[in-house]
Length: 200
Image (cartoon, rainbow, N blue to C red; front, side, top):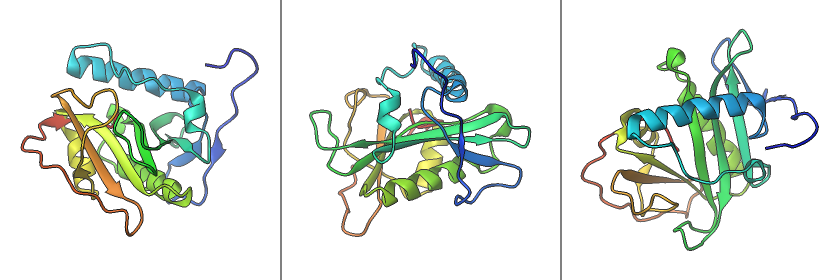
C-alpha cells in the first residue's frame, strides 16, 4: 500500500472494445477502487471456501507495465464494476514457466454478472500480455468457483500442471492458454472441474 502521496488516477483505455455504457481503465493495484473490489472478491472467496481468502502475496509493483497490468471496468455512473490483472512470471520453484502471464483478481460485482464484463476483461488482459511479449496466460481457480471454470474453458483455456501457492491443494485447478503460435503445452487431464467463480 502507498504510505504517502495520492494514488495515480485511472487512465482510460480507448483502444479496448467495451460494452455500451462501460469504460475500462488502467489503475494501480493499490488504487482505492482496486482495494474496494479486492476486498469484495476476498470476502467471496472466504464465503465459498470457508477460509480467509486468497493467501497469494500481491503487491502494486507486480502489476506495473510492462510486466503486468491492472484494469477496472466502470459503469455509466463511474462506479467500479469489475476488475482483473496480470503479472509476469518466469520459471521458478512454484511451477511457473518462462513467459507466463498470470491472471489475478478477476471479479465482477454480483449485480452486473452475466453481461459479458468478465469476457471483456479477459480479452483485454490477454491482448495486453501478448503485446508485452508474454507467451502463455495462466490462472488458478478452484472447484468451488464454477462460473470461473466455465468462463475459462469456454475461452480456450486447458487444464495444466499446478503452480503457485495452491498447486498441491485438492480444491485448486490451474489452467493455461498459449498467447502465441509455438507456445503450446501438454494439457493435464482433470476429471472433476467442480464449481467456481473467478481467478484468484
